[in-house]
Length: 605
Image (cartoon, rainbow, N blue to C red):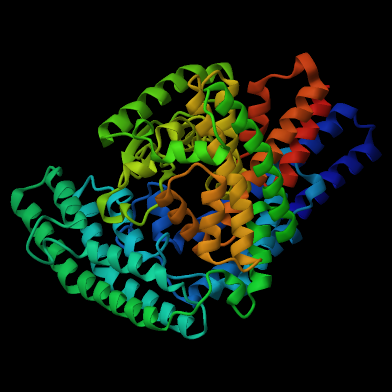
């Protein structure tokens, strides 16, 4: 269709030239209209592709706030479904390249074209390793994702929504059974988590099916959530009672036996778990790790190069920390100062309420300051919530869930307050800036609110960009005048140090064959973080190979590009304009981000 339109436009211009000389303005108008037509067709192509993929993913619809006939369903967990999704993506890429000429597109459409290509290449690189992913671990898996989804994502504002909730409870049993079978098959082929992971998974699973209606005691988290959501509906009491009763029956008859089978399978695997923490022990472990590093960093850096970047930055940050240590008058080695921060009560909160109050205060002050550094601000509100009890023991220390594009769900900054000795006062400020403002909430909200971008750009992501922005935001807070307390500034450096150390320990575990204990010792020797924090972090890196390297690699690139722009533009440089260049494209690979900043520098220079 595109070529036909262009051919018609060319013929029109030619015939006009034969009959009477066309004005340059007329020719330009025809060309402009032709390009607009092509760009519109490309936008329609991306929209059709997104609609196609949403039709296969009820959970993706729910995250976007879409409630339709699929609202009571889960995604198909089968390998056949994963293969089909991959093939649809590759077919769509081939169609795009066959039907559209990149050179004939606008600048904005060319970027979408290139990003769709990059997305397809990333999927192609990952596809051969799809069976290497763990089905259940302490960071991921249906054992915690199902209740978290129902409680936080499945919204209920009508009887139909509540019916869909009950339907999802019924369907959770077969979903978990399919995943348990996949986990067993992979374990038998050597794709099995280390033995220390199983107690976390088992404990989370038991937490979900503890309490009413599974047994005597307080309501389980899911049951309490269902009852509250149904109670808030404006429907007759008899209908409310019926919904709750059917939900309880689904929990007992579908959810409980599925979780029991999951627990039994985890206990079976634990008995045969192999030694070694890194994925180097997989049959194709070296190639798999190389793919993971490329996927997460969007670079071609090798494991050895990333390891060395980590070591170099650890040394740099240690030097900055020693300056603060001298400023506060501490006498002793840097490691002595680390131990002082780990063990002194003054650096920890006594109550969850006190921690949350300080987070609120810091983010309120940051919100007031944002307009001085950003031309574009998020519309979606931000809320702060503790991680729910059923998953707090195994969950990460902090994370963020983005808002729904229709405004029905705010952005949420989750803090894990299970162990207050893992949540130092010194790190509170940097952590809030990373996960909240100007970090993930600002970036992800702006991305979601870029209504003129194709859906795959509004809702997709590149880890080095997204997490690089989060880490960059921690340091940006200092540029904005925060971290007035030197201990808080030390905490900021501690968080940057943490990400530098990640480059060392992630490559150490998965490439250099370090044990979990070796990696824990490295963080103990080189960071001020408490023992519980360190152990949980290393356990995360073991089951999430490569992901932890994205943060520092992404931040270093953003800082490099900002410094380049400041040097080149001088007085013409403004933070607001630079941040628009970074944010208003949505997430992109780091090489494309560099091209965009360089083009902006050339245009303004």
